[in-house]
Length: 459
Ligand code: AMP
Image (cartoon, rainbow, N blue to C red):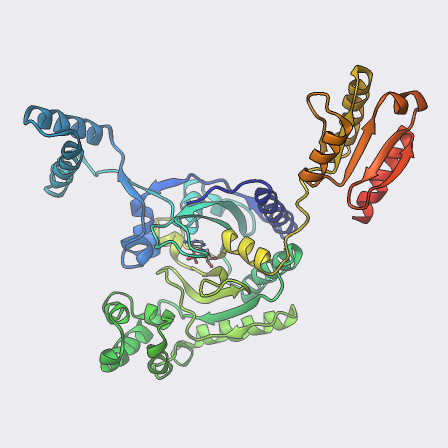
């Protein structure tokens, strides 16, 4: 986890603001979701065998009964003469033993709560809970916020990270929906200035053809098991598709010989993929088909895609997404088609920084320097006018010598210093100094406002 501080946070705001603008133009509305949910939601949707759920959830038991049991266990330990440090550990151990032994089962299900590792499952839960299927047309939702996974931290991989995501839910699985979603994504990346993105896509089949493919893949993997590392060997049993994600150098040649989903798609899935390519072509979208793009989550069907960006090393995926027809139904809702994506904001920001694409982050446009009580009154009035027009303005809270004040303005990275002293007030003209080259102009109030507005238009 980390803190995001100014001026970096201004860059984050810019990116999120553009996401809101672009998504709005495509007819999406924002959904604000809770940060934690029941563990069961993700076990049923993302899948109990996926790493996200089996290893990476931040989970706890949220019940007054648990707290009470924990308190009682600790009290008992005090009487038994345990030290403080031992007590905490032992109390938790006894509590977990009592949970495991079914102590709570007689009182109903133990409420296991998790910090959300992703938001698609939550969006589907909300879709069902609020009967959104009765709304006209497709339901198009976007979200912005933190996600949590207990992963090994590294560059571009954090335990609290941020996603910007969108989902389309409804009755249609027309490939034009998939293609328009990708079009929106690419439009967003272009607007924020993230150049050099590459789109990869694939179809991972449906409930008809995927199980047959997975069986064929598993059989083929068993035959080459000895040539795979321990992680991939384990995945043959737990989640064979994930073997295709492997980046282990020595496994690459073996993986190339494995059966490909593209050759195992049913007629309907083949048609869907062909139509998707047509829809991409209609929109001028160029992508690379990649049969190994299976994505780690159980709920995906047919279209999957990923977008990579430069400057990120091995964690270079800035966005992942795909179709998940049937997920809403699996969670207890009506038959519904769905598709969505999640952008990793942390990685987008890293890529923008690494490729020198961060926008101007000056914290201050105009630094107003004043000396004397009369000048302070002018400074306050002018600062308000400029702020009203959207300029970032600093006014020193205490009187400062002009030299000191200009020095601070420079160090803050201000673009201009506005100098107000007795002479300026008497002449009715203020001195505006451009700090980059020390060029100075004497301007009336009206001229000053006009000049700064024009300057911003050029900037
Ligand atoms: P996923 O939900 O796994 O499909 O991830 C979608 C996107 O979120 C990825 O392409 C990454 O950009 C980002 N992402 C996933 N996990 C992390 C993490 N631990 N730290 C930072 N970004 C992440």
